[in-house]
Structure formats: structure tokens, C-alpha cells
Length: 465
Image 1 (cartoon, rainbow, N blue to C red):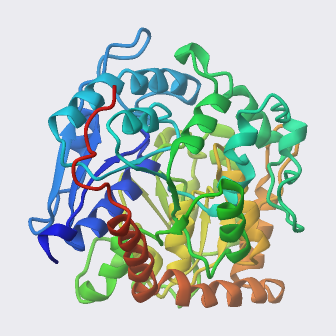
Image 2 (image 1 turned 30 degrees about the horizontal axis):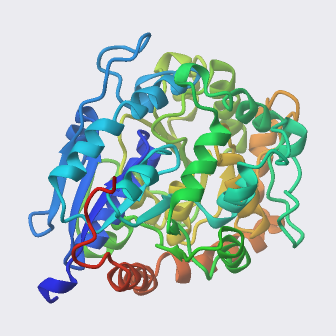
Image 3 (image 1 turned 180 degrees about the vertical axis):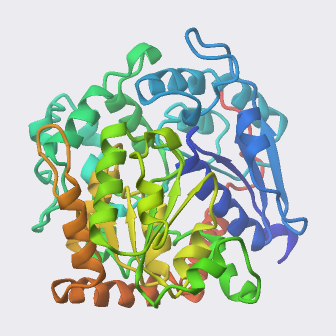
């Protein structure tokens, strides 16, 4: 690549690992095409990132956040606090605006800024330095469309945020769809929308974030959701790019087929497609009641299972591990998710509806059994169910509770029953989309070409008055 074509791109994700990891993966993809990346976050987050490959030009930049009252001294990301205190992490994020400005002042070579959904002040700072910006949402186009057009969000005529409004498709979606929240997960959205003591409402954050960018990018594929990708560009009235799955571990599986890891021997003893992989992400903490219903649901299903359990082992039902030890394996801490999903014995994934995990599963053509809890998980689940690649466990619509019988029913349907044959077939078809490195590389290439063609002209990258 000619020196004149090389870009300096700044990446600034929201302080949650469900966003940090795809931002880091996109950084690696961009650096692999020859560009310089400055990845910006808090010291604790930077120190927890995987090692940067030596051949990639990625500069990890630590910005020291201010102290925020009622936050533990070392709390710098959402995993450090309970869900009720996320608004304080947003306040901490807002205190990074001045250090970010200082960084840009000291680095006049920056060509583009790629920022996340809660960094609402980033586009204003980018404009001050005359740097174009990209809003990158590490989720599906459908999720972003559901939130709404940028101009409408900031309008006084925008519908009020109520659970009732969130449980139906919004008026700007012109085609039939089931993508909407259930009442129980809509209530979580409404409760978190005030902004708390961060002083900034969710609506204002999102509206300014969306409105200020020059380009929008999503972690998705036009082959999977073509109608939503087109609508995203239409309602934003800006270029909209898919950047693919962003999971290097998926494409690295083929290069390490002969490697072994702990628990592989156990999986090798299970029949092909017989075993359920169970995981609910790195940040979600399930209540004792939910853990019990999941555990008993797995037990009643009589299916083999591998549970990557991140909660307190004391929450598991008494005797559960002993009763299921002949067909179930529970592992606390980190597990190699991509390798597990790639294993022939894994036939389905019981999970929370996180977009990254769902996409990773589909890259291996495995169907989904889904239980959403927070954030955009409900929308992801409705989209995935609409695409017939998984099914949602039946819940009480008012409080979100579910039963072991509902878990068992879905597990059996997706894994073994004739009724789930269509879901299994649809999931297998997704492997040609989500599992195609050629397609993923092409999405990134198209995105990079646009950034090169629309980089700032020499001499204009300076602070405006």
C-alpha cells in the first residue's frame, strides 16, 4: 500500500466488553490492510485487551478518567458495576472528553474517528478538529433501525419512551416484522433511559451520536438482513456499511484443527450434534431463581450439555452436578467459545441473545435457543427468530420469568424434534454467510476503500475556532 493511502484511524468504544471486543477486532481488520489504528479507552480496559499481533500497527491509548462519586476507585467499565449503576460509568465516560481533545491536538495526522453509541460528544470534537467520523454500532442493522432516525429522535414530536411503544415495530419500518421488545424487557429499557446522575438522557445521547456522524457502520451482513441494511441507509440519509462478523477466532479455527484443549476429550465422546452449549456472556449475572430453572430445564431435557458458567457455583441446585455428571459438564471461568461451537458434538446454543455470540454460533451453522435479558438482546432474539435460525424460550410477559419446562421444550424442539428441523436447516445455511472469510474480508475492504476515498484533504486537519 502506498504511503499516501495509509490512514490514521481512532477507535473509541463504549466502556463495555460487548462493544470493546468488536471494536478491537475491527481495529485488527483495519490494521491488517496497512493502516495505523489508535485504540482509545481507560487504563483498566486497555490492560485487559488481548496482545496486539506484532505485525499490526495498533497503538493502545490510555485516557485517565475522572473520579465519579459512588463508583469504586478501580471501576472503569460496565463489568465493574451492577446494571443499576451503569449510568455512573456513562458519567465517567463523559469525563474523557477533554483528554480525548488533547490526544487529537497532539496527533494532527488523524484521518477518521470511529466512535460508539454513548460517546455522544465525540462527533462534536471531531468537527472541531475537522475530522470526519464514523458511528460504528457492534450490533445488527435491525436493532439500530428500531431506535429510529437521528432527526426524529431529537424532535419534540418523537414518541415518548414507554414500554407500550417499545413493544410494537416503530412507524418508520415499512414492512411487516416481529422485531420489537416484549413488555418485560421494554421495562428495563425505560428504567435506564433517564440518564441517572450522568445528567444526560439516553434519548439525547443516542440522537446526538447518530446525527453527528458522516458514516454509519454495523456488525452485520447484507445477505442476512438486506431489508434492514437498506432501511438503515434510508433513515440515516448517510452511507451505511456492514463490517461483518468481526470474530477472528472463527476464522482461526481451521488453522488449529490439530490443537487440543481441556475438555475436548469429553466432547469427543459425545454423539455428533447431540450436545447443547450453554453460555450467557461475560457480564450477565443471573439470579438464583433463573439459574435453578435453567439447570432443571437442562436436567429434564436429558440432553448432553456443556455449560460455560460465569456465576456463583453456590447458586446451582443442590445435587445438580452429581445427577448430571454422566452427560453434563460445567466449567467456571473462561471457555474457548469458538472452538466449542465448532466441535461436531455441539448441536445448539442456549444463550442470552448477545449479537456477537449469536453471529459466532451461526458462523458454524448451529441453531439458537434464546433467553434475552438486557439491552438490545430482545431485539436481536426477535430478528434471529424471524430469520428462523433459533427460538425464544417462552416467558411471562409481565416479569420475564420462565420455567424449567419451557427451557426443556425449546431444547428438545431445536435439538432433536422433527418440529425443529427447519430451524436446524436454516442455521446450517447461515454458515455460508457468517462463516465465509471471503465475505467478511470484502465488507471490510469496501468500508476501508470508502474511508480512503473520503479522507480529509491535506491542510484541513486542524482545530476550528
